[in-house]
Every structure is written in structure tokens, then in C-alpha cells.
Image 1 (spheres, rainbow, N blue to C red):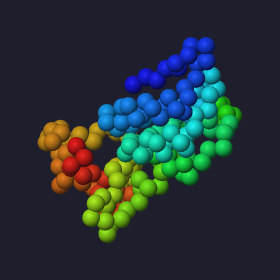
Image 2 (image 1 turned 45 degrees about the vertical axis):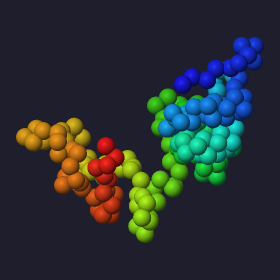
Image 3 (image 1 turned 120 degrees about the vertical axis):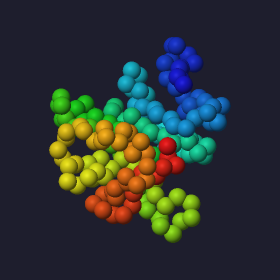
Image 4 (image 1 turned 60 degrees about the horizontal axis):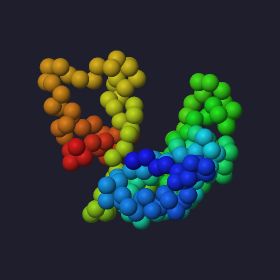
Amino acid sequence: MLLEPTDPEVPTLTTAQILRTIDEHASELALILLPGVQFYTGQYFDMATITAHAHSHGILIGWDCAHAVGNLDLKLHDWDVDFAVWCSYKYLNCGPGAIGGIFVHERFGKVDMTSAKQKYWPRLTGWWGDDKDSRFHMTNSKLDSSIGTAHLLTEDRIRPSARGSGVPNFQSEWY
């Protein structure tokens, strides 16, 4: 879905327009991704209000903070933002080739083994969720051609994530 300014002479999106659009399309939205600052106009979006409104509809929201980080006081955790990403070569003055950043709210990493609902969240574990014997070999050859790819979706092939914590990094009903 694309949001566009209602007045071409004033090329901004009001918070009310964004909230109204969320209301109108809530039943079909699973994820919202917006910029923290719109780079053409420099408009700063009310991330706290928009995030709270998205959450009131059960919608995840992420923010592209490439033009916000280093320019604004960001309180991503306090605003309950689900995730945000940014580069560091612009307003953090790191230069070309510098690393980027990502924020993922801590609630997505919490494990509650007493909960009957959801004990853990799906997560991207990277190298630490892979086989310790080969995780840094970078061979790009994880598929076992002798058994095809079916093993990728079976629970008998699960390895514990994050240094053998015993919490699997796969759950079949996610697929």
C-alpha cells in the first residue's frame, strides 16, 4: 500500500492520515514499514503515536531510521517499536561501507517456559543457530542432496539454537 500526500503543494503525510489509513486497512495489514524521517521533505513521523495505533490493531510495525538516527532522539524501546533499521554512513558520519544497525524489541527474545500460549518467538539466530562444527566454513552447502530438501522442514533435523540453549530455532507450524 502506498500513502501519498493529499495536497501536492504540501507534500507531507499527517499523523491523522496515517492513522486513518491504518484503521481503513487494518484487516489486511500484517506489517507496516515507514520511514522515521521522509528524506525528500525532512518530515519527522510521530513514531510513538503511529506505533501505538498499529499495535492497537495487532499489527507489527518497523521503522526505516536511515534519516532519523543521528538526527533525532530515538526512544525505540520506550515507544514499543517492534523493529527498526538504519545505516551509519549518513548522519553517524561513518563513511561508505560502514555497518548498519538494527533494533528488535526485547519482547521478541524473551522465553517464558511457564506460558501456555507462546513459549518463544521465531528468531533469526544466524551462525549461532547452526552446526557448531561448520558454522564458519561459509561453504554454502547446507543442502544434503542425497535426501533432498524435505529434511529442512522436519523436526528431527532441528539443532538447538544459541550455544545449545535447548530452545529450538524451528517450529513446524511456522511454515
